[in-house]
View (spheres, rainbow, N blue to C red):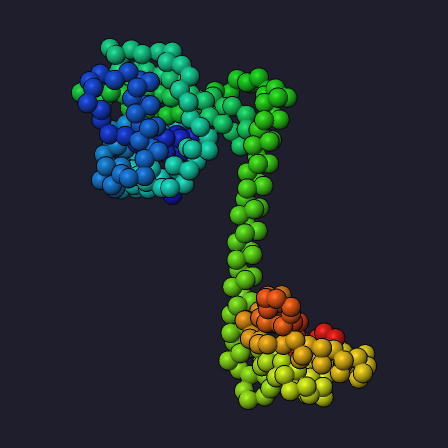
Length: 316
């Protein structure tokens, strides 16, 4: 897109179809234009019509030719007008307008006889300070409304925002950062959970016939060993490190205690660590005997992958 004047940035402030009322003032015309800019339900044809109604391209081009010291041919003029239309249609324009909070402040000059008028508007700059601009306008041919063609900035220095205003602006920015961080953290957690679930599914699909081929299969093998009272089979389900630190008498005593109370068990699910595909947690639902109602609980068992095999990485 060719480089346009400051009006290009603000031109995206123009949108609007002619109102039913006749002879709108410059302020009313520009506010109608700004109001339509915010609309997202307009067709391309309506936006093009709003552009033609509220932006005086011919006057803008005349000023451009004076500034550049040259006359543009028909093809160049058509390209420039197309650039304006593309800018006017863009979502970036509407977003920029929302952020900059365009406001009409004054209507210092209106001369219907000469067909000239001016407005003073303000916008919020990148640093949060107010910036002022002149809106130069011409009267539409039918006299019903006004069209803008240039929006130069007023260079006079504006009072610096007060400490309380700067504090308020900083607090608003911080609040937005916090909200954005929370949204990202929630999205991150959702992705981690999805990754863990898919990894667990893949691990269960590729386990083969080995009793230690998947996180679920090694845990199921361990609980079948407990049901049978087979301490050696139970130990075979654990990592070498855990086996080396276990005492046979303690393992047998623990196994017998659990087996005597065990009424039923079932594997609920397995989850592989989203940050480490070699670690997983398998949940097992247990029903144990006790005086009165059965004791139902769900325990989580940590397993790790060693080579192609999964082993329980907890004390047996």
